Every structure is written in structure tokens, then in C-alpha cells.
Amino acid sequence: MSAMRIFVTTILACLATLTVSPGADNSLRAAEPSPQAETANLTTPKQRLDSLFADLKKERDESRARQVAERIRLEWQESGSATVNLLMQWADKAITDDKQPVALDILDQVIVLAPNYVEGWNRRATLHYQMGNYRKSMSDINRVLAIEPRHFGALAGMATMLAAAGKDELAMRAWQQFLDIYPSDRKAQEQLGELAEKLAGSRT
Image (cartoon, rainbow, N blue to C red; front, side, top):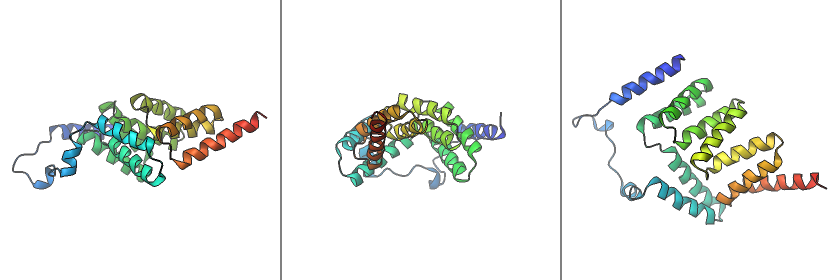
């Protein structure tokens, strides 16, 4: 077991025993929910995502669609676990500091703790891609899409790797799936158009 994995495991054990007494400092307590947060809590995460995806599919203005897509990403990032959220912050910091092996160890722990947390798999897929581990990246993308088939970020990553591997028809299918979910994304439209032209040229 690596030193980083031992460190993360130790921190997790400490976090599991952490409690806040009624007289504790206010900085350790959850902030009072805003009216917007209370409204958001009236629906489940799935209901919020379904509503956002419906908006994304019908929105034709690129700027407004981008805002909806960002709200979807924020929903994906929320794990429902303070421990997992903290580990994700540590992973992001390690990536920013160019400590990729450390980030990978942390993301491995995230996936062990929360195997159905889609963003854990997605973040590790992205990291594997950055490290040149394309097969592992594709494996993680498949897990992302098994949990959330509408994950347009994972579909974009899949399409990019398939195109780089020369599998243009499969890449086209991935971009088509992406655009079925997020039809106003201009970059995806351009990528699909370029692949269609390439394939048409190869058949003439």
C-alpha cells in the first residue's frame, strides 16, 4: 500500500469519528439554507437532473445552453458525502500541483467509498487520459456511462479517443449521442461535421 493511500485511509478514519457539539464554533456548522436551497431540496437529484436535461435538449441558444450544462455539472459534482467531496478537492489540488500519482490514489479511494458517484469515475477517466493511460480512461468512461448515460463530458472524451485511434465511425456515433443530449454545442457539431466529411471522402 502506498504512503499516500495509507495517509488517505487514516484521514478517512479521523473524519468518520468527527462530531460537532452544539457549543462548537459556528464555522464548523452547516450554513443556514437559503430559500433557493430549500426549494432545490424539494426535489431529488434525479428530478433536478431530468429537468435540466430537458432544458438542455430544447435550448438552442449556445450561451444559455452552456449555463444549463454548467448546472448539470454542479449536480454531478455533489456526491452527498462530505468525505467524498473533500477527497475530490484534494484530488483537484494534486492535479493542479502536477502530482498525478497522488491524485490517482485519492480518486481510487473516492471510487471505493462511492462506487455509484459518477464524477469520481469521470475525474479518474480524465486523469488517466492526461497520463496517457487511454485503455484505462476508456474503461472508466464506460463506467461513467453505465451510471449516467447522458454524461456528455464522458461521451466527448470517448469520441475524442476513438477519433485519435482512427475509429471514425464509432467516434461519429459518440458525437451523435452527445448532440442528442446537448444539441447546441458548437464544438461537437464541428467535430461531427469534420468526421462526416472525412468518411464521405474516404468512400468516394
